[in-house]
Image (cartoon, one colour):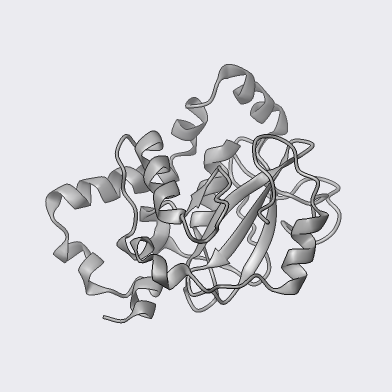
Length: 220
């Protein structure tokens, strides 16, 4: 089985028939949590739930300006920080390659994420408005939904300074915190596959132009 079989979810190793009962239970626990927005919303403090209720359930911010998801004036509406992670984890390129991402910080309550296709072919920056009761069903241009990866978290709410290196450790900590046990796709253990990816000049300029607030900041 090749590297791209891992990326595209074609590996027989992860077919249902080849999973042990314990692993299948974990898969289902993650998948159910990622699909259950009510459960996700109930995990937030009451004051955050009130702000989300005020934002309502929308696919696009009314009056948003610029390209959907890529312009801070037209962020992707989602249900809180977990919604951000699930939304990114369910993105894929048209050929099926999955996306990983980390949080760069926030600008006036809008969260910025840097993303990268697992094969290194596409970098992006997305903006999210987390104060809504569900995730947008609209996708950014150039992406499709990928249901296979609903069994894995591929994004973190924290800055990963050497992104994409360090994502295994970040997701190990995230899954331990969110679902009660660490569970990361084995592909991300192979740090050598994630090294050598260079940010394109345009993305570097975009990162430098961000004025972020909070505990995270744009990577150098």
